[in-house]
Image (tube, rainbow, N blue to C red; front, side, top):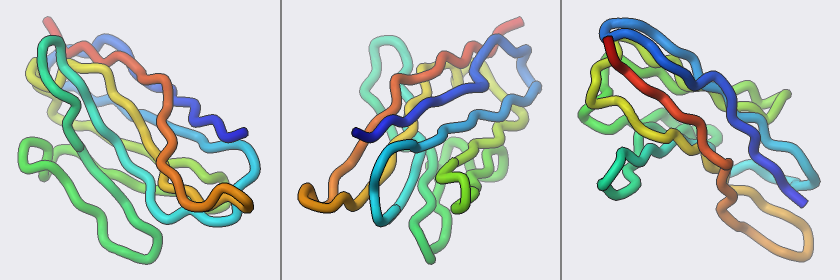
Amino acid sequence: QVQLVESGGGLVQPGGSLRLSCAASGIFHEVYAMGWYRQAPGKQREVVAAIPSGGSESYADSVKGRFTISRDTAKNTVYLQMNSLKPDDTAVYYCNADLGRAGIGRRLYWGQGTQVIVSS
């Protein structure tokens, strides 16, 4: 069984910073990519940032220059450093991981989500 556990969400004032973490645990033999999505109330889930193994990071236009995705391969953990936060960044943030597992193959897994609220 695979689990993705997120942490680091909370309430922050506009202009502030937060760092989200997501650790993948369980049995898998390959991590193809990890990423972050978010879903604001009444809106569809949207991609925020992604980091493929051996590739370059990518970002949504709305967060470029403010958010940074990084990964610790030894810990199977992905981070999202969020700076200069705006009220529009308020959402539930979900991490995902594209993993390969013996007998199952390649599949996308999701965390449970962590709430980020940007408000004064």
